[in-house]
Image (cartoon, rainbow, N blue to C red; front, side):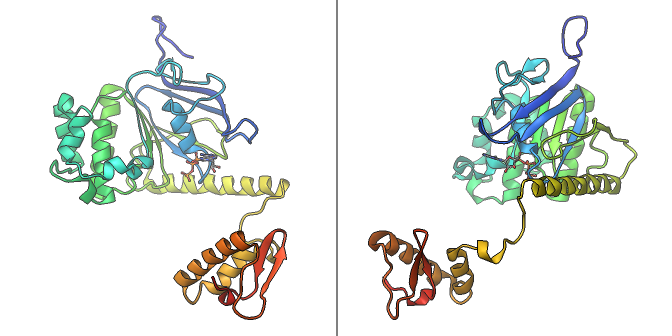
Length: 327
Ligand SMILES: Nc1ncnc2c1ncn2[C@@H]1O[C@H](COP(=O)(O)OP(=O)(O)OP(=O)(O)O)[C@@H](O)[C@H]1O
């Protein structure tokens, strides 16, 4: 780690050869990931779906334990000794029932300390165009996102970890927010890592771009030229994501895994049933499907109204004509 004469780290984020797997015996989801960012950096995290971006951000936020102590923020271990001033904002927040309950925004923000940061809170309320009188259960997804951003950004953070949280903002609010974030890094030396697939309005945002390829960082951090346009950003992301897909296909072929449609003989009985009967009346078919499952569990053999249309295959019932099955 780079440090000054006082032993303080120059790096806001110092992640070295990070490995992570979800279970002890499962494949590594992150392997040898390196991410070193100086204070004041703004890094876009780019990679295909499933590359590990959210996992990495959550590890940096100290929300997931890793076997090795590979990640430091502001010189401190992100899990064992997490530093103050790290804010993580992810998409899962909006699905929490609490933030969809009948609570007024002003009370909600006060409950997380908004009154202590009134000046910043008021600035963010203007930027994010938030009405303090909104009720959380009566606002749109984008409006709820704005409240989340206001809540998360009210305190003076040193490191901000963003996971796709600006995609549902309207273009004006998004643009004002991006300008606010740039200002925060330039005036206070705060650092941002932002995982996104949407690059509109972001060409002036990054100082660096990190490519996360199937859980690895295959190339050094890309230094972004402030003069480059959004098309350059999009082209770069497209090129990297194509590489990711080609590599993934090679890897999957090696292990015999294939995406897309399966061969006919691999399609399960129930899938065949679903395809055959959902076209006419999905709801009643669904109900009948459940009834059949229940009756097959209860009576071992589903009862059929007319000729016997069931045969047993590997402990399951193959339903030839499902409309014949009655409760
Ligand atoms: N709770 C979990 N248990 C097991 N595997 C998981 C879990 N959550 C995610 N994964 C797997 O970890 C890998 C990385 O997921 P992650 O959500 O970090 O990807 P991502 O790059 O953020 O994707 P996206 O762009 O779609 O948001 C994926 O293969 C995913 O299937």
